[in-house]
Amino acid sequence: MFDRRLSATFGPETTASLHTEPESVRPYNDSGDKTHIVGDASHAGILPSRNALLSPSAFGGLSLLYRFCHQKEPFPDVCKDNWLEYKSMPLIKPERQARSESKADAKVQNACFNALYAAAGVEMFANDAVTHAGRHACQQEAKDSGLDGRLVDEALGYQIKDVQKDHYTPHVPIEFQLQRGYYSFREEDFPDVDSAQLRVLREHADVIRELCNLAVPDLPKREEEVAAIKTQAASSKRKDVMAQKLLNSASHKREHENFLALVRSWMLEAIVAAACRQRNFDGTIDYDQATLLEHHGSQPIYSAIRIPLTDQWLFSHPLFLQIASAVRHAEDAERTQIRTRDADTARATASVIAPQLERIEHHIGQAFTSVNGIRMAGCLLIYMCVDLIRTTRLHLVAGALQDEKLFAPRNQTPGGAVV
Image 1 (tube, rainbow, N blue to C red):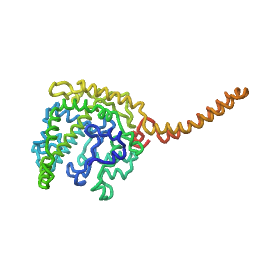
Image 2 (cartoon, rainbow, N blue to C red; image 1 turned 90 degrees about the vertical axis):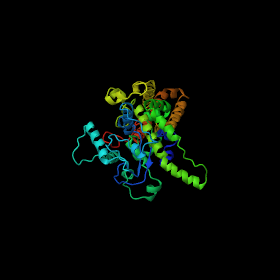
Image 3 (cartoon, rainbow, N blue to C red; image 1 turned 30 degrees about the horizontal axis):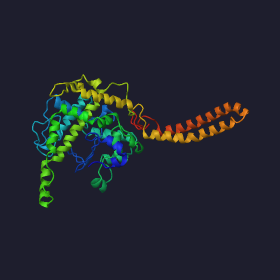
Image 4 (cartoon, rainbow, N blue to C red; image 1 turned 120 degrees about the vertical axis):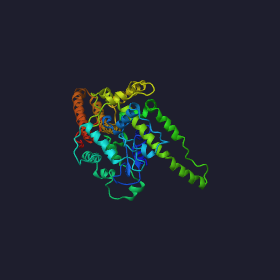
């Protein structure tokens, strides 16, 4: 269930920014509760990180590109495969493929996490939390950032029982999603939620999609097959409608569409993220850093991703060079990007200064009506300018204390505290 508060809260431009191809914000509502069954959750949400270096969805897409392009893993034939198997896309496949609703075996899932921890150099000991470790860190970082603890509890399912939220309006709080994505989570900043990679995903969607199709040519084929599945009843008669509902459930078209959309969006994000520079803890771009591809392009994963039909390195293709140029332009544009609140501050400052300017003009005009006044004009002008500067500085300092920084998010520090 898509969170309707996005459109109501952010406004059309930002909502369009977040709705990249196919969707950048993807809250889901599933039946169930916190039962510790692998893959189960009452609801979940995905928001691309503002920092490309810390975007799980982008690196999930990079992993998929590596598997499909280098390891030659067949892309799932969603209309033939058991949908309960392909939806998990396990990194480690068990010897016996389970055909049950348990989806992925817990031991296999833990084995994946242990292998990832080992590769990252994380020390692991017996009885340490494995998959739940991220849940602990998530809560700590969110609360340390200054986010209301009640929103954290609601996002993780710890809130007091609420029938309306549980059954009719379940969602991951927007503020929590923004904080975990390294955006400002203050309500007054909602209209300014955006980032360079989101703008590129939005403005160059066709180019990125075309390159993704070259990398994984079976993906558009599967999308066409799923789109061709009939879901409308032959007539509005009850018999035909009820029969079609059964056919729709058996076809799993909705599950196929969700799976294909998620896989595509992750790979699109991975392509764009490769051209991004990392960000500082306050959310600003580190312009002195190289892009992720420049840092890691020679490493095994990036260097192994090649277009199947031509064997050309994906990241040397002209389409990617076009995308990289667009990312660089979008990142450079953030240097001078003025947010809505900055414009409001400027207008408020102008409204305070305007009466002072009128007073200066009035006194100088009177001074020049006499000879003595001409001699006094210089001193009077200096006095009035000093008064204007003093007033302007006081107003700007007050505005700065309110806005804190003009061109950077204002809720992230290395320690996660509010600055």
